[in-house]
Image (cartoon, rainbow, N blue to C red; front, side, top):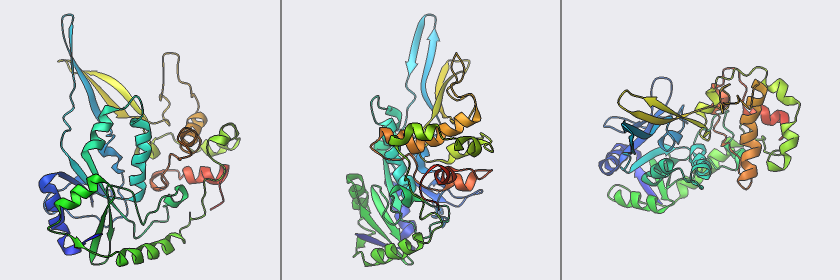
Length: 340
């Protein structure tokens, strides 16, 4: 395990940014968000960012291809320019787990080469939680907020920050910082873990479980009469899908620039009435059906296809941002799992 004095954190950021592009969560209007590091930017004290770190690998919009036509000739241009290595510092445990969920979507055949390219170039430095919010329920999905996944895991104490490499990428990053960091024992980290776990044991959603969900109960949950009352207040605004670190739905469209065609991808939401609309119409014509689709995917369809892993990481963003306070916790309380 390695250690760095907190007073040296700006020097650490500068050293990383010298070799690779560095992003870290900083305070901004409307809440913390990831920004490219420049001198003077400091790590936020907030627990989490408003939007997740998913954007680094699956951005909200991206160009996929360009087409130029001259007569009957069509030139296809690959617009990708992402070739630089980058580091994302301060990713919380929930977001760090979301990457493994997205990998199961984008890195299976047929592999999404746009996503794969970014994953190969990115190094994740996760940061253990010290002050979980009341909206946090990552432990429901087996995530340890005190020991997050990532290429490097970091623990921030009152006077220092500790690092442990978990992958080859992590080893390389810490090797490049050897002039700043020093060897240390893990006593302070162990003490912090125990203290935070005691806090987590008192969280309001501690008793929430995935009991009653998964692929084995697909038709039972699909036909549950409770969907009607649960979906009645839903506005279909899609806010929950846009702050969610694991939502992966997108649309692909072509735009005529007047000088050629740009084909781009943008996030979409299963809560929208035109989602998956085809020539014959929309397969989900009611808000109930669209609402059910979102939560069935997280709690039933995804685990059915991925060896029991759920499509939620308990980050609590949908609890905080839904304008009518309808979220996955209420669905789990109503349709299964222990009352919390």
